[in-house]
Length: 274
Ligand code: AMP
Ligand code: MN
Ligand code: MN
Ligand code: MN
Image 1 (tube, protein in one colour):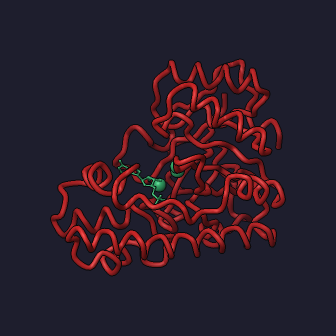
Image 2 (cartoon, protein in one colour):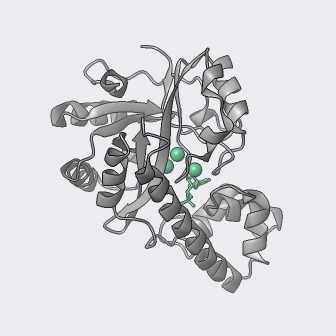
């Protein structure tokens, strides 16, 4: 299989590299087919000159936040039309939702004693799509927690005080937006929602019923058993298979550029659809 990574982040959301640095690193890592999928924004693509992309094939992408029942869920839009009015509307809607959510998160964190959470998170976010990782970095910097993982475990992760998710567009809306902007909706990292096997299957079924067409069979370094299960599910249900590192920064070896993400042979790779 060619070297493919269809899930990466830059510093226009919660990644650490600029879009240009990411392209450069991806090329050095030997990636042939890449998508930049920042959280709820396609701003990275404004920084790139498509004409200069000789080394690798780039697919326009985005990772939308939504919810299913009470679980926060991510849906990738791959091969979306960057100039589409629908996509513009969708990213604007979601970025307004992000801004509103950030205000709510800041209020909650202030109550538990985090000093000046909004200004602190904004110092890390700058113009980027503000998210929980920016609050987490501030909490580490001011000594409120020892590291990012503790920030999520104690205060920002699922079920904690800073986990506020009722602002996003619905899963149906997200899937429609992706389709109407010419893309394919892919359920991101199905193994990372803390769902039981039964619930995960229910999520995948509903996602497909609502028009979702792809499943991220491999997300970074994951249990081979999970890969086998997801590959079997994708082929049984006729879902296109995707794979991505979910790269954010060079310091995370379990989500790095150029890591092996080969899909099991029974999968129908999503890039066959392009
Ligand atoms: P948000 O977009 O604000 O909902 O934040 C979600 C992002 O937080 C994810 O995309 C990850 O990049 C990051 N994240 C989630 N859980 C953790 C964790 N335990 N440690 C560090 N980062 C995390
Ligand atoms: Mn992220
Ligand atoms: Mn995600
Ligand atoms: Mn991601």
